[in-house]
Length: 125
Image (tube, rainbow, N blue to C red; front, side):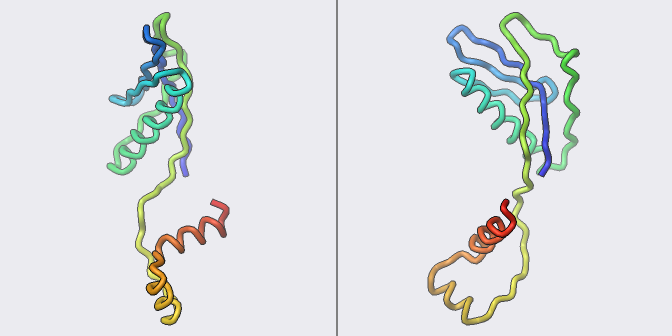
């Protein structure tokens, strides 16, 4: 898991909504109906933007220094932090007894899902 922190510019709109942009991340823009919603949407937009860049093996820019960000009277800067997990599926070969495989198939269990749940539980993840 990797942690990323980026400054976001929150622009207050006349209807009490907020437009949020990330000066370091071209095209990473969102909005929210309220400040709380805008904060949530900013975290979601940042996560999606970073996951896309990681998936495409693109360079992720460094965050700007707060001193270098210019804002208007209708704006403020807040830092948004996200943790990015690598959720890509990987294929693993697992051996189990035939009778257990038969029971799993008979029960309609997804071995992949059962293994994921068991690992998360065992690793407290």
